[in-house]
Amino acid sequence: MALNMVAISGNLTSDPEMHATKSGTAIMSLSVAVNERAKNPQTGEWEDRPNFVDCVLFGTRAERLSAYLSKGAKVSVQGKLRYSSWEKDGQRRSKLEVVVDELEFMSRRDGAQQQPQQQAQQPAPQWSAPQAYQAPPATTPQQAPDVYDSDIPF
Image (cartoon, rainbow, N blue to C red; front, top):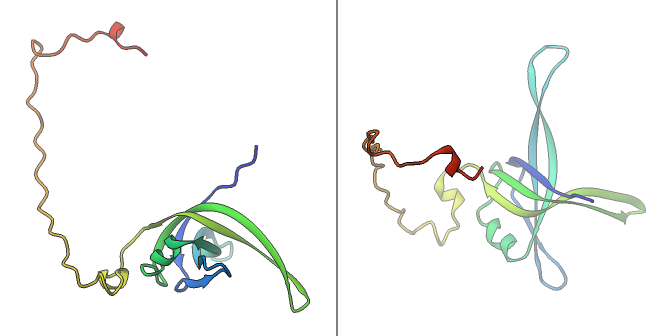
């Protein structure tokens, strides 16, 4: 059995790049910096060491999400690994990238940057203040239902 599944979270290293195939399918390329925490043996201090992961997303989702993504945005990505190789200028090149199935926004920067221009002028939704939790009234032993361990199926 083979399993090809990846889940990462980190910050975008640049604005996403949009391309299209010859048939017109939209392709969004992005790079996510994923920090790995490690102790520096010389100083004894903990440091973040970035790993840069190339990701790609296809179709209308790529077109729509590109309006909301920008450099520095924190995202969570789930997908599968894909290896590709090609020849350029007489040299063999290759890369490993994540083909994105799910992309989740992990943080919000200011609202104007996260919304496309046409939606930025819509009024913000009004939220009511949260209501205080009220516990249900306590039951007395006479009100407790008749449930015994033998009634529970596990």
